[in-house]
Length: 460
Ligand code: 5AD
Ligand code: SF4
Image (cartoon, rainbow, N blue to C red; front, side, top):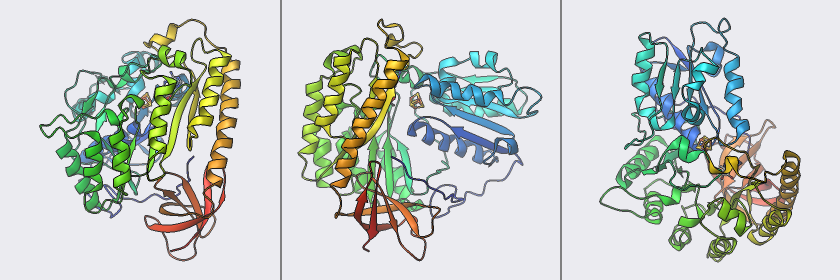
């Protein structure tokens, strides 16, 4: 899945071009982001902190005085990327630049980053971003090395200004960290325990986002549906979805990622009742084998998971479902892998992501016995992806002739070609002559389908 978005609107906070007009300090920063949407949104907030200090954002590290990498450590490959980026700044190559490592690799590797890349001057994990202004001030006044790695934070990361990069979809973190203990996952170590934001503050930000011109909001959390309102209001997650959807000016509310354990019928009921809540649920299963799920400590069986799927499929409005799957978890046998394949037939996912198991530091699965060979993991992944491709193609082909409302968020390099997203999060490409449609909602009738996107004709 994924559309190409070849536009960059030079706005600070929203599609209407609200400019904060901060006094310039004459310096520039560059930030590159790896990993999940939480990281993407964290980078938006970090950019806001820097803009408020008078830095200007540039899109090349060479042109920057401050270079930040916001890193991901979910799999080894992702974690390695930052060290290859850092390698380009060996002493002598980039004099005078402040190089900072943020995010999950920062949290995980801590001080070791200074040892591997002594030219780095700032290391800060996501749970310590509140300290960024202080850390920057220390660097600006001559400190060689500063670090923010606390995890035991009470507060979430709020900023005066967030420089949102996506002009059409505003990300909004409602819960940080993770209290689940999936045995393969670094997130509880890199992002700390769950902390939810008060519902009133979330709703206030949604109202501001509408003022900035946004009509689509995506609520974020590693386990977004484990949200627990810390205020006296005690708003349940499904109520919060409804509350956000009912803010005047909001046309679409998305939320990701849902954990099956906390996925309750009320969420489906909210989607059924309120058209502005998008009919898409990302509900990672990870494996189709109850034995492997137990070894992963996912807290549900294959059957319990499939009951959640049935609940969603019974909804009065069709709801698309996507998933994440890991192949080659330690000890996964051929027949357990086949159970994952058969789950694909039953779940009929509309999309998703699949990965080879990657052992991560500190996690219980790191040292589990019976590791599956890399070659075998690769084979399983290819088989799984081939099967899922066929499922998706069939599901998409069944949509031919139907008309969907899309929010246009991209323009292809070919003239008059546009890309939009349906409420169910499918990419729908279409041709339309004339003025720019970016940011508009239009009706498009599906004429053709591929496994990852649809093609259609505009009807309004
Ligand atoms: N190895 C492979 N994939 C992983 N994921 C999380 N940890 C690992 C790991 N150690 C996958 C899961 C998760 C997604 C974000 O990344 O499928 O849902
Ligand atoms: Fe990667 Fe997880 Fe960190 Fe997101 S939270 S950046 S997926 S390790």
